[in-house]
Each structure stands twice: as C-alpha cells, then as structure tokens.
Length: 312
Image (tube, rainbow, N blue to C red):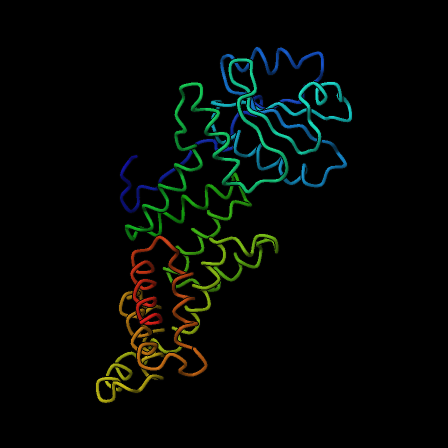
C-alpha cells in the first residue's frame, strides 16, 4: 500500500463494482448462468420471492459483498414465484435459500437470514474452493488504508479517504465512524454531531457507530474538565483519595488523547471504592473501552486490569 504523507491526499477508484456480476436468471438460462458459469467463477444462487421479508434484508447484503469482490464471484437471483421448478429441483423448502456453485455443482449453502460476517465467510469459502484467495476487496483496502493513516496521526488524509468512500457508499457505517473519529480528533465536535444525526436508527447499534457515540459523550464531558487539568493534578497529589478530582482528571486526559493514564485513574478509583458515586468510574471506563474499540491495546489491557480488580 502506498505511503501517504500529509498534503499528498490519497484517492480511491471505483468501489461499487461491476453490476454485470449480478443477474436475474430463469429456467431457460439457469444451466448457462450457473452450471456453465461456475466452471470458471464461483456462482452464488439466491432463491427469493417478493413477499419474503427476510429475502429483502438478505439480498442487498449478498449483492454488496459480491460487488466488492471485483469479479471473483458472481450472483444469480432466482424468483421462486416465477420459476418454482428450479427451486423444486434444488429441493428448496423455505426461503431465503442460498447456494454456492463451483464447477457446475452446489458445494455449500444456507437457509434463512444470516449476519453479514457469516455471509462474507460463505462467499470467501466459495472463492477459495476454486483456488482463488479471499483478498481484501477494494473497499476493505480503502478502509484499511484510512485506518492506518488515522492510527499514524494523519487525520486529514484519513478523513479525506473516508469521505471519498462515503461519496460512493453513503451508508457505510465503518466509513461514517472513521470520518467521525477524524473530526473528533481535530476537535470538530459540531461536525460529528451533524454526521451522527444522519445515521439511520437501525444502524445506531452498529459497533462502529456505538464507538463514536461513546467518544462523543466523553469528548463533551472531557472538554469541561480539560481547562482544569493542572488544578486536578494538584488536588489528587495532595489528596489521593479525592475520587471526584481523579474522575474529572480522567475525563480531561481522555479528551486530550492520553487514554492510558485516563484508564489508570478510573481503575484506581474502582480498586479503592467499586461503588463510588453509583458506579460512575466503572461506567465511564466502559464508555472509554467502547470509544477505543475492542482491539485497542489500551482497551485490552484495561479490561484485563478491571477483571483482576473485580475478581480479586
């Protein structure tokens, strides 16, 4: 992946994929579209119907993933209302029903709605059966590149990359969250609030979005205490048992990017008084973990230390 220095704005190509890899098929075309085509490229077959609610939820997810794979897999959709004979031949008894064809034969399948992660694994297995590799899609590469830039402190270029992704995929929650974190790092809280206000209600529980919401709450609380950091440091030096001062200092430090010390101060409070102020320290600590994400080293270490305290 190309190294990008500040000012050398990264750019991405087309993330939407080639629409010709998705096709509505029929009884007359099934042999060619699926049997023959799968000898060159794995083919996913989605049996669906207009009246099927889960089908309407599952279908767009499959289509999105197939498009992301850049031609390494194809999708054929079969409306069982129009072509029941194909469903009967495949012994489909309920829908949505999805099969993977390789070399003219069904090699894998599932019935019913599935989470996106499981669908990705299913499609990757089909690609690997043909000797292909489940390489990161252009979208995954772009998101990964943006995350690397952000981790390296280049919020400007990371934000520009996330913004480009959103121009092509406005509902991509990972890109929404990434852009929000870049804006937060630059202190642009109002822009983050506006961005989050446009997130659909059914996406608010997404892990990436939840992380931003937690960060937003902490940023607001930390900003209040940020100007008092020196006084708070002095107060806890003079009185280590001043949990309120330590709590406020933790929020201020987190807002300033000093996540390790912020976490350590909250752990100190919990170790000495678990239920202090109706578990406020523990609640804020969990918000910090949500804001940082489960894979952040500070979260992993903090959770380990919390467990030692709670179960000692």
